[in-house]
Length: 240
Image (cartoon, rainbow, N blue to C red; front, side, top):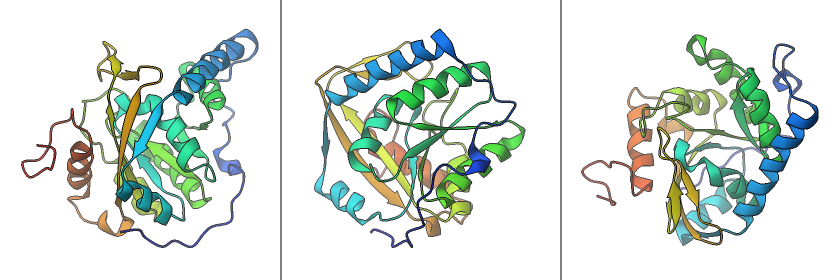
């Protein structure tokens, strides 16, 4: 069931979320290289045939306000394209560290249509939570991979439920099935869908009101596992 939201005034990325003075930034050939890689990825994902079930289409049509995208880390490749095709009115923001690696990722994200929010996920993740909550309260979408950045695979950390609860927005759980894809030898067996292949998208909403109990993290994990065919599922899952 879709949840009604009061549409907040859209704004540019809040000043509190812009790169902090301590955040590394790349320039020159490094920025150009990251941008070229991003353009290649954008062209790649444009070739994908992304399908939606009728239920998922109705869900998207009913999501009037900002939401928190939640998907497994190994399905990140397609996230920016999903946002562009189905939520073009609300830019998707993702947390990126203030490190040198984060500077490369920021330039890459900018070229694929994602907006980076610089911040640290250390010290209990307080800075990361505050940054993403500010993005959502400003009327933008934000994204989290609950098993990232280093795993364990298909195990949710508490951040997603905390961010959605504090921002008062629903979680949009994203499931993907790739008809044809490469798997990288990384900790998460990252998916690279073949160009011009088909990606089946399945969505489910978890309203903020369902994220206020002590079992919300486990519920989120079970629901996300059930939407992805290669993930372990609960005994009563439809994908068992």
